[in-house]
Structures are given as C-alpha cells and as structure tokens.
Length: 538
Image (cartoon, rainbow, N blue to C red; front, side):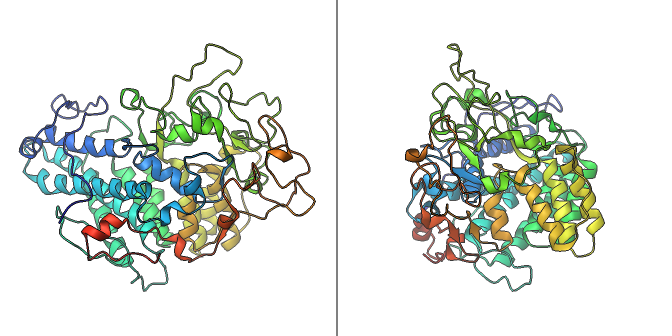
C-alpha cells in the first residue's frame, strides 16, 4: 500500500549540543542510510534530532509548519483568540470549516506531520537496541523516540476521535495506531485502545528517561520531566483528576523549573525566550532554517513586521479580558485603549484594534523610526511551561472532590505570582474548578489549548452574544478602524465579528458540545490508501 508521507531519516542537526564529545555534539549535513544511522548512539542521535526538526519544519506552503501550526489551530478553533480582520490565513480555521474538509491540503498537512513523526519514532525504537554505545545513551534516544510516538498519537486522538468519557465505555472510533514500521492497511482503534497505547508508551518513556543522569543541553530535547508533564496532560484529558494532579506535582517538585514572570516585563523577547525559568520544553529558534516569513508561529501572532498579523492582529475575547484584575501583570498583554497607548507595539503601517494582543513580541519595532525593518522573524517557542503543571494540579485536585486545600494552594502559586493583590481562594468543588479554568485561559492564551480544553470537558463553543439593537454592530463603517476606539459598545456583547462586517461569520458563533464538528475528518488520501480506515461523520 502506498504511503501518505515519506519516512525521512537524515536531517541537519539543529543546534549545538554537549554531553560528551562522542555523543551529543553530533552534526550532519547529508543523508545517511539506515545501517549507518544506527551504527552507534552518536549517529543514532541524528534521527532524534530529525524528529525535533519535524516539530517545526515548514511545509510546501504557508502556514504549514508542524506542531506550531497545530498550536495556532487549537486556539483559532476556540473563543478566546479573536480573529479581527479578514485575511487569507486562518480565517477558515477560525470559522470551523477547514478541519471538516477531507480534501483540504491544510488539515491533511497536520495528519501527515503527526504520522511522519510516528514513522520516524518507530524506526528509532526498532533499531536503537543494536547500536553500540553506553546503555544510558541508548535509553536517552529510545526514551525520546517512544515519547514522540505517544505524544503524536495523543495529538491525533484529540482531533480525530470523540472525546474521552471518564465514565467509561470509550468504544468510539479513535485513530490508526502505528506501533511498528508498517504501511499495511489498518483499522482505527477505539478511543480506549488509543489512550491505553499512549499511556503505555509514556510509562516506558518515563522509565527509560529516569535512567538518564546527564543533563540535556537544550530545552528542545525531551527528558523525564517533559514525559511526565505530557502524561499529566493525558490523564487530565481522560478525567483522571487525582492521577493527573499527582503526575504534574512530580514535575513541579523535581524539574528544577520555577515561576518567573520576567517574560511579561519587557517588550523585545516578550514570552519568546527559552531562557525563562518556567520553560520546560521548547522549540529553540533556528534563524538560518527559519528565514522565510509565514512559516513560523510568530508570523501569525507576534506584532512584528509580518503581513498577516500586521494586518490582522490577534485579540483576546473581551468578556474574558474584562474579568482580569487590573493588578494582574498579564492584563498589559492586551490593549484596551489603542489611542496613544504608550506600550503599543506595532510595525510601521500595522493595524491597531481594541483588545489586540501584545503577548508575543519577537522584535520591538518603533513605528517612528525609519531604521526598523522587521529583521527578526522567529524566536523560541514554549511547548510547555511550569504554570501549566500548577494549573493541572489545581484542576485535578479541585475536580477530584477531596483535595480542595491542595487545589487552592496550587492555584495560589500561579495567580499570586501574576497578581500581587490575589488572595487565597475560599472556593471549593465546581466553583474552584471554574476559577482554575479562568486562570488557565488567561495564562495559556495563544499557546494551543482552548479547543482541546473545551472538547475534553464536553463544553460548547460559545463565542458570546452579538451586540443588541441600538449598539455598535462592528465594522469599519462603525469606527472599527486602525488606531481608533469604537464607541457605543454593548457591554454584554462579545467582540467576535465586531472588527468588520462578519469577519468570520455568524455560523461559527456557537457549536453545541458533542456536535460532529468537534471531530476532524480523516484526509481522503488516508481513506483511499488505507481502506480499513473509516471516515468520521461528514
């Protein structure tokens, strides 16, 4: 049977690494065959570095860019990241049409990216035991490969399968599990079987990576703390609340990461620097390999001189913004008043719209300076930060029905660090869980979680009410213009579709929980080449 994707084996090693001269300083600039690749642990590491690169490598057309595209997609499908002004990229993602098109090349790219990682991981897993070198180095390589297989299957099942029901009976269709290097036709496993395989792989990755005593030299590499953190995400998605909280606590207690709000304190490099003490796992910027615009995360979310976000700044859901305390350092990340705002960061000619984001700043352009040319187009990107682990602890303990004190204490660490006026919550049960979710929405805004959170909790997508008659209905004709504050706003209305006349469309204002639209469709190419793979409801 033909493959949808190619198994790729040799890549340029992305960053200088060090552990021993014979191991983590491997470099490669040319393709090598499989027998050479797995001759020893030094050369085998090139395969792992190839997988790291797939996480961010660009495709054949913007915005195809591996996991970075996945992250952006997950927030454009939610309500908290608002699409302001019509533009080519991400409009159809935001309006919930593209992921329902089986012949569309963009969602197909995500499917292919996921299974490309799985194919490469399987080849490493099947060959590394025969490589010469210390056992610790083999464990390091194999542990990362098994992790990537689990991580990729987890990314896939959240999209293509129905949500995991913690009450049980998860016999609904999940994904095609590829646990070996085979291209034979294979049916989709159930959601329960998919999560069983993911958890088994993560447990084995944790076991192997626990044997590794040397320190990774870059946050792009996977260590035991990264594996445990993803395990905590998986358990949270399954509704195994107490287990998720305890797994996240292991990361909090042992990873060495610590709360560090310094990324919010300055403009250049805001929320884009892996040296931040909170960052646990990250893409490290590779300027020589990321020279083209529109092929990295920041092309679509950072207010730099890049056409799409320059013309269509991302905004926060205004009804969420209004709930953020004025003493919270994070409130400055979104601009409520764009007229002569002293901290506004936009490139020359860029649009400024009410509630626009200032969270991710790759460069610090001065719109009054002729010298600014927007030369910095990429930066480090957090895949995982410590606050998420505290919030998993808080949510898991709160929803477990017996750990309110632990939940409040975990929540306090994040909320107090961001807001000096925050006091320890006195809430419990569902009310406490809702407070945790508010903090999660603010803290993790734009980092790829909202659609997945709504789906796992069986919540509707609700982008808020439209303006009532007599109030500003939005659009350029009603003063929704560059560098202007619109007037006569409905205090009860959301800013969805306010920035121009139906920028995305009213049809995507609301989707009920459990609707078929929550499942991505399988690409037609997979159905054609794997006749055992059943399509989701169209």
